[in-house]
Length: 351
Image 1 (cartoon, one colour):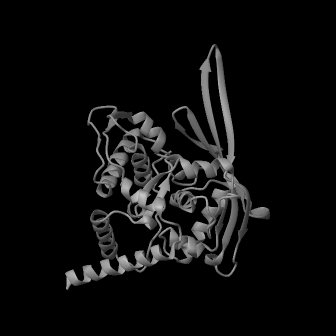
Image 2 (tube, helix red, strand yellow):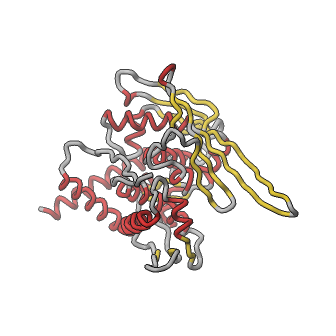
Image 3 (tube, rainbow, N blue to C red):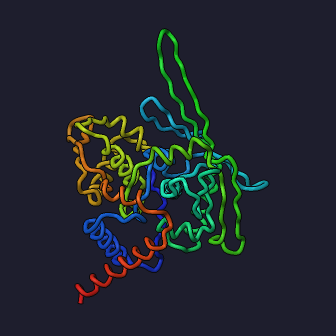
């Protein structure tokens, strides 16, 4: 199997390369200048919102993909979507299922047990009024191509099934426990045939997925994820989610083997030498937007070293999010005001 190049979404078909470079520079400057506000702090799980989903659609002969985390093995099975003769079994893949799962985690964590426009904690129901609104909240463009891709990936995501296996041995016995986790218990998808952007969905998450997204997810900066997902690969994003989550409880140096890294991040990359090169390049990209990160890649060793580092999102910023409320009108107004003020400062400086 040859190395893949995941399809890149064109964020703005009218933008020149120079304009995109300027946007990236402005984004880097913004990340360096200030901490993320509450609307820019989302929550990620190193497997459920990242590496579990393949970077590209696997071949038809692949029945499942899996990732290990200690004693646990997470397995993803493709679901069936479509109607009549158009029904197919396909995997959710690429950046959109990652963003969708992280968006769900954000809504669940921000709701704090209270009913909001997107979450009903009592029934564990998620509501997406429209794909346009979803794209807006995920920081994506509103074009028809993007809306169609997001809708397709949402349907694939809601149709797939996750299972978690734990194995152990003792007294001559080999014990394997398995929990089957369809992402949803029930789902209603509403497709607008004239304008896909007005399509929506309501679905009830399974208890296990809801709890994992609410308790096991770690905060990350969406400005960082926006920057990391603008390239052709999801690897920089997956590495970032893994590292910022790992640093929360890291108190001493931790060697991580290249074999482990390849198993976790090397999907659809056939040659390990190519993987190492791509991983190093991705790590350098992560370091640009995560300056406090201290990870060493010794040249002639079969491992990298994680040194204790601050998390990407400071504890103070996370605490402020936990005090605030999701969808608060004052917070939205303040965010808009700060955005206008920053633009005004940049304009005055350039003048």
